[in-house]
Length: 542
Image 1 (tube, rainbow, N blue to C red):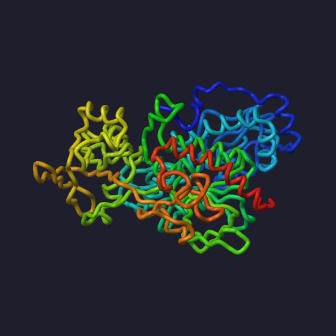
Image 2: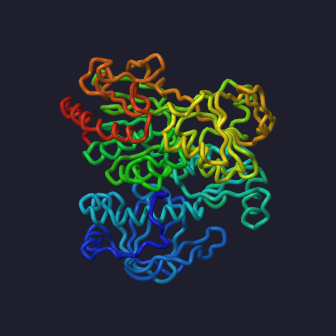
Image 3: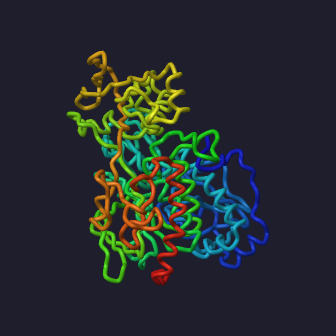
């Protein structure tokens, strides 16, 4: 299955071409570091591109101050990873292992240079993405998650980091190794989150971690944007790529993680170009990297809670915490979210055995228990297939009598042929059992009631659109989906009835609820947005 970047271990090392090095030298300055001097500290923003001329730079274990990895950076190599594109935070401490001489180029000038020289950009981004993949897989990061299994709030932080492919370390409080014991001492042996080496987060949330990692950018100091893209699912990310490539000053606001509902899919096999499949998170993360390359910025986790249109045609979005951001055009790509089931004790058990996504993080809860997946769509089918690798057995609960109308044929055939999966047709989950953690569920079907022991229930049923924040500025259908095109008297299919507001993807009434169609809509709509801004004289001054 495709990953978010190449494998750093097997990737051939290719030095930058001499003309590219000369170009970096022109925008940068030479600097020397003494042996043992810190080149980059954990928590500092990635403001500088560092190219090594002489010497060696090593990764440092912040707890022992010893060398962390065998590999190091030497002459012709450069420092950094993919967070550099969005001015992210350094996750690793870097130190000169010997007398070292480098060229340091300011981030903004380096990004401009990469825009002018695509071969240089391709080289750097390939290496940056491979490094992020390696850091993520090796859990090399500045965030430590302690006892996530025991606390839904800590689980939420871990889920946010995992879905955004941000490196972090996770520790079981019952382990007795020295690093776990040290982390537990900092947290007084309670579940929690540590950022940096010793900073404990009280009442941890994804927002607090994002602030430390510089993902929650100071967007409110920015001038008015050309385009505000609300929602970072496949449609929003595709629009971000094309907006940036067309020169629009665009910002994406996402309230959970880039990928949206697609990010909860562990394996997408019917998306063109990925014959061995790819996870929804990795697919949209790749798109995010493309968008960042073209200058589109991403902010998360922030939620838009209201929208107003001012007399000059500018739209101002009200964010959580009463922040405000303005743009000349709005793209609605907020997608949909799974509906909850009307079951007693559902909310109390969410995060305690009840989940709404099936990724590597949730799969670990299935190692010693049968899993139950509710839903008849592709996401539910993909979840059942993925979880069957970990759980002893998977039960797929489907309310209808067939999967033919709701699931791709290749997937339904695979499910029906898998001995590790049982499909329960015309069946519903009608009762939850357990107090501190889910212990069992009751099935009600053609043969009556049946209790199934499980500590992992995945709910992936019908979805509701996220449109309340539009504050009545656009028309929606009876189910809350945004009306566009001919339904509101517009010539093009993605325009709403309000000039300057467009909608794409699952949130749009009449759209095909598939990743490929969402990507297509997000790609196509940008040309119409560009024309609207140009005709109205609304391009941002910059």
